[in-house]
Length: 396
Image 1 (spheres, rainbow, N blue to C red):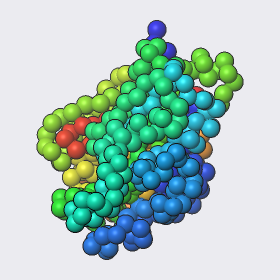
Image 2 (cartoon, rainbow, N blue to C red):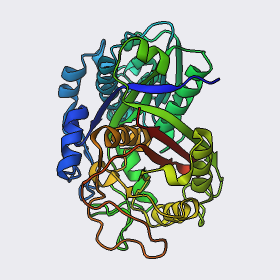
Image 3 (tube, rainbow, N blue to C red):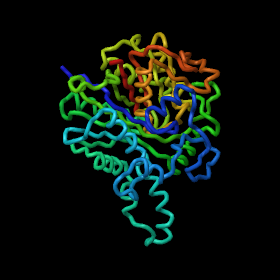
Image 4 (cartoon, rainbow, N blue to C red):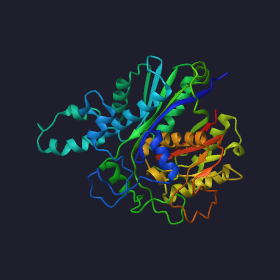
């Protein structure tokens, strides 16, 4: 019989603050962290961003990495969040621990700062400063710093990256390949990312409005989040507090388009249906949905259509991207942490600025904090290329 997998630790860094408690306070009070950029130097100064309000020096001070000159913004916030998760779970990584890391930006911010001077003068700087440009470099830095010697994987499936790391970790623990795992992801803001999304014409110059009729696009954000997973048996033996059970999960791909979701939400529907099937749950068992909810015209309409197809009666739906912006590769893990908080706090966090909900596919939306018992919460993360993932967390 497959082993039950549970969450015993979690850590998070977003524009809402450092750590689970600061993020929770913001969610409860309805305080978002999206504002004009202060740290990212860009021509698009009018674009609101979910920046982590700390410069490189402060991030190095908070995280204390070995050889800090070679650490990117992505890696620094990842280290802060991962350490919080490990401390909460009271786990010291070893040869039986896995690290599954999701990121799409990697060390791009370091490369952007290095490249102009290098092009003018090849003797400017050292190439080792951008050695960790690729996504795998970030994962290797984290593993070495945290002492993970069991298994290491980097996943880049766009916006579903970090939730896919949680799925991989759960599968490997259930199969007995590793004893425990740190799973999640991180992405720092970079000029390349901002300009890329701007070229797709899916950024909003105002604060994003997920599932609202007036929505025009997303706000980019940055962040990091990790959960510690282990078997329920091990957690109970050691007397740990179990935060949530990982009940069901699925990753599907409708391969409809490079960046757009299929009009009827085929991939999203399949992901939710397969996650329910994996968890042995019925649609009626789901108390709450933390939606992908990017606030782009395409995503919100197709996700709402998919939810309507799967659920005869819509559970209360939230998009916490209205608080943090879209944190890209970190989004799935950030929203997994928020989903687990909904279970523990017996509270559903609101979708901010939702005044005129979509009429084409009516759903039940949470627009102010609601005190309600949440036994099963489904979290959606849908990436470019049709890579759709859904995961279900349940009350322990």
